[in-house]
Amino acid sequence: STEVVFSFDVGNGPLEVKVKTGLPLNDNRWHRVQAERNVKEASLRVDDFPATIQEAPSDGFIHLQLNSQLFIGGTASRLKGFLGCIRSLQLNGITLNLEERARITPGVRPGCPGHCSSYAALCQNQGRCVEKANGFSCDCSQSAHTGAFCHKGTDSLITFYQKIHRQKHEKAPKASKTFD
Image 1 (cartoon, rainbow, N blue to C red):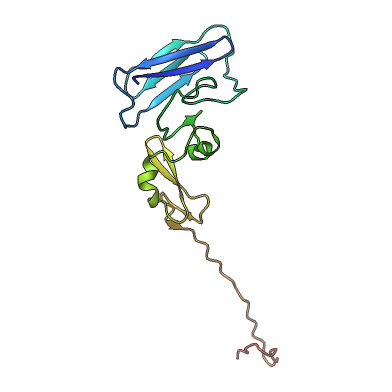
Image 2 (image 1 turned 90 degrees about the vertical axis):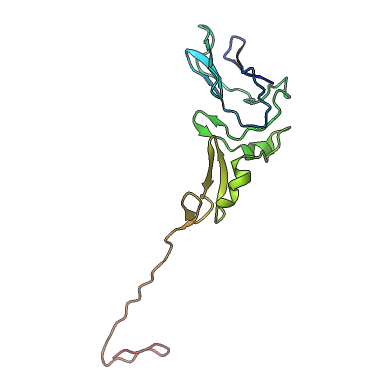
């Protein structure tokens, strides 16, 4: 396919913004798709192709209200709209855990080969590889380590202090040492 469609409904019927690349997108390469909707307009960009921008209608809701599921790659009535891999997804600037969502979403399987399929072993000490838009990072939150690859140990040395009293002419209890 050579087309990407961004479809949404803010209360006055579905609107679509389309980008036609003229080149196949099912070419075993990663593509960056950026869809945005704000009060003024909706825009869609694929890779470095020019963005398609459509003005928002004057009527309808200003804010996108998700009273149902958000579909990426299809719709409730057309679930077979996308065949491929999504390596990273950000929603309002927050990177979503796609592996976790894939396990609970019908028709979606985890394990899309991305950066983590090649570099996950770089995450050490139970660090978890997390796909990013242009790479990966290691999540060290389940580990006692820090650093880019969870390779730095934390200083968890606990020092115990023992107070030693020196008292002359007193007998020390049995099983303890006496100091002169």
